Length: 368
Length: 186
Image (cartoon, rainbow over all chains, first blue to last red; front, side, top):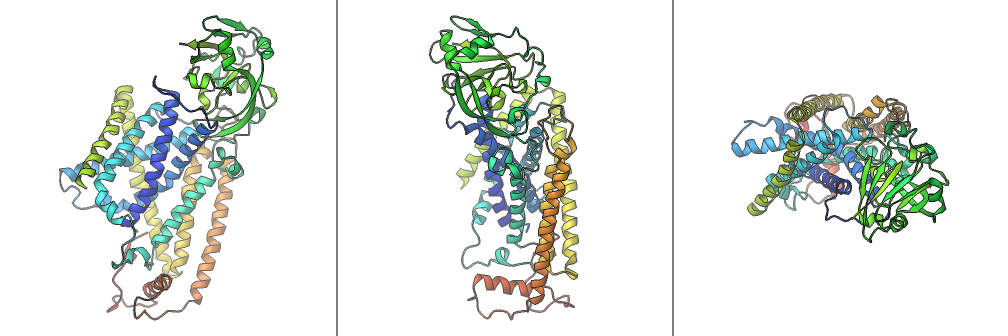
């Protein structure tokens, strides 16, 4: 089983997962930290849900695939002589970096879905920069192995012996048996976790850390009111919404309720992979922008009651602010918003990560 | 070919540069050392502990061919792989259960769920192994093919039968099939 044909076959599957994981990860990253020239689609409303569900699912599927790949090539770790030339040394060093970074990356990603951070560095930046290192090492690895990959991309051609492909060894797995085992493992870990974002399989979700429909008002919570430290400020009768713009206004909760209310069925899609649809109603953000005389195409800064935290203040590009489905939500699934979901008012917009759906909103600031 | 390989290598160096520069720029020296430690420890645990354990486990199962037909060993090994990887994946949730102050995080009894999953894997594996064992008892050796005109399925079957170790087989069979990878553990 430890032969190039198997290594190439399993390598293709792993590379596909890693590339999907990298691209979806980049999309998620730049939604959160856009460059000034970037603009994002707001439809379909489940775009980010799909993106992040795929990110976490391919990451989880990559765990057994990476283990299988490393098992196949394990004897190469002990090749003799260990160093043939400077080029050979570079090749081995690049593989060591590739493997170490991939192992840590997948491990960190899995633990992040549990919000478990047992390391002394930040998750987001390490995960982001390691992703670049991994994708670069992957390209170099493919370049180095290209002749081998070409040779073994297909089964041995007609006329050449196909001993490796079809013979069943007296002991150990055949190629088919090995791929069956790997496939069953990938299927098992996928089916028992993907239900956190793919609702039809919610009942089979045995190991994902969230049951997205479990929580107040039938929806899980990423950051609780207690964690955010807003238990009293959000319930205060003195709460007012400040909107800063050309004609600034301050609105009470009942004034917001008196404005035209709109409904939207939009998912909460967490960067950690879980997602769930919900019925929101409230005031359109673009109506609020009109009210303060914001020029067309304005972006928005949203400030939460949360005293600190990486997402206590977020920014929203004009494509989301102008969207008819983007609400300052006051109600969720037919009830007044629970404090865990951002009472008295929260942002909900289509195709954006949950961390940007700012809860416990205190101020909206028009950005020119 | 040379051109493609050179281009790919150059293209690969750019993202590596972005990643390393980003890490270098963002973290203090202490944190970089910590990241390095986590990278090295992860690699050492995988290559030095996990894979050797798997190889030893595989070797033990293949040794069992003296008492059990090889097909049974393969099915048992497959079941162990599914069970082992699933357990590794579920382990963090089991360890962290009840540790979060967010009641909607880690909502299930993951140890209980894992027990169910392992039970299902065990039932399927044992069922498959029993079927394989029964069917291997029915099969009889087939004479080797005269020409290569058999269907792929028959060729596989013949190869399977020919390579199956005979009871009280001599150490070297004159004119036998060339050695396969049979000697490898796992």
